Amino acid sequence: MRQTKTLIPALIALAACQPTAGPSGEPSPPDAAPPGWTRHTLSTGFGEAPGYSVALPAGLEQRSVQGIDSEVARFEGDSLKISFDYGRYGNLGTCLSGWSCRDGTTVVDGRSAWTRTVDKGASQDESGLAHRYAAYVRVTDDVGLAVQADCADASACERAAAIVRSVDFAG
Image (cartoon, rainbow, N blue to C red; front, top):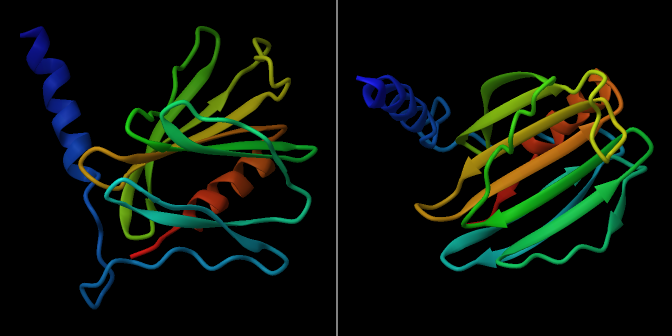
């Protein structure tokens, strides 16, 4: 019985993460970038998966990071640190003890994505920032994009969510 209790919600969540379509039946386009944001190509493709670009606000500086088995990118500003991990083993990350976590969904370039909003409370991690926004979108059967943003406040996490919704998968 215990396996059934966990299997059914997992199947429902998996079914919810299929591509979504706009009124014409075509996939919904990514959100337009707000004024002052610039689009950055972060991948030209990963195996059979298409490349992608993302719109970022001014004030975020790219940091040097190296992936092991995926394509990674990281940008940091005063109130927001955001990382992208494009490959086979991404996920939303763990909700640690003492954190308040809320799971949800959003649409990323016509695809449903899992999201997690976190209030770290007094148990902040090494980022030193009290909030987190994470998203995971499956792109092909075996490749997905995981995004994790550490935020100083709810407003910075809202910017992170807008960044995620701006992702545009090529092809």
